Length: 457
Image (cartoon, rainbow, N blue to C red):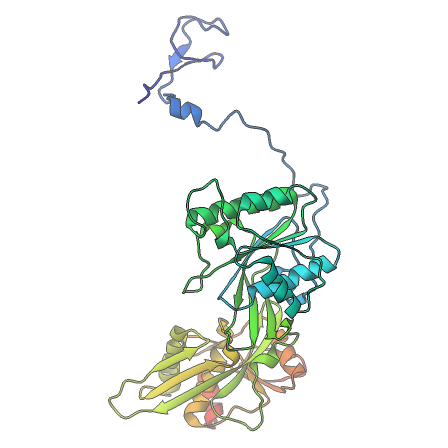
């Protein structure tokens, strides 16, 4: 172990020496050298002191007159919407999703559109051969797109090849778990390899101005495999959601340094690949003919886009002594339990001897608290077998006291419902009319349940 070294500092001029002497060699003053108790220097601390020896970095102000990069549109409006308006040059994007959900298909379509627009797009696959990617492109009708394909897993080989000429506008890496850096020991997919490979690719994006899109595998619980720091390293994290048994897919941003995280892109999987869905409400609303008990329509809000979804409820009476089940698909089961407690405590409607099943049609997942009132209406409708009127949408947040609280962007919700042929809305009392919709306001949940059960007055 290296022996700690003392240092002495001149109190007059600040000169530092390794030994004491009566006169300072720099300023000439006598008896000014004093031992610095906190300045014990070892070989390790001297080598790892980062307060000197570096290069100066350039500082700019927020209002500096510098041309900012323009977003690169991909020609797929739903993809650009989820990103906040398009791809930012020099950005790093991570997209994850279940196997077979359509990640590679979507990114191949994006790369083809970018290449057709006259920009250079490179697609590097670590899971498939180049001919396999070409077969998929032919099936999607993209065989003539001037996308540069490669099958490689070495990050050094990829960056060496791309560094020889003009950097591409878009670089797709499918997937980051298959990449390998020869600077780190370990097999591809390990934590150290994923972190090191992603670091080199992100640095390439920042230095050369290329937009890099990384495909990430997911674990059983839906989180992206690999180190958590991977999501911190990139600028945008996108999640591709949906059930393979359903036609629709939802692209949702979990992190976005260049836009909001509340926008979604909606796609439908067809024979020619992923097709944009301009009216997502058509996917989540069933054919509404005659009125059916146990259903209600809720105008959800994803960012600035209203989406109408159908909430379905089923109640089954049980014999005394049996334990009733509570099952919710597409909604938080804890919030369902809370709402059932409010209905019993504040409205006098008991579900104690009743099994309750709740489903959001189309496999849609709701996290909006404004769905409380629609869920309550569906539950009361199922229990009483009294249908909610067919042309009515329901929204509002329910408090534990039974009061109904106003929700954000009620006007947008009402306008979207009016466009789709709905004429009436059940909402909190403070909700203003919009979109030509008639609004029936309720101040408490009990008032709404009495309205459904016909107990007014």
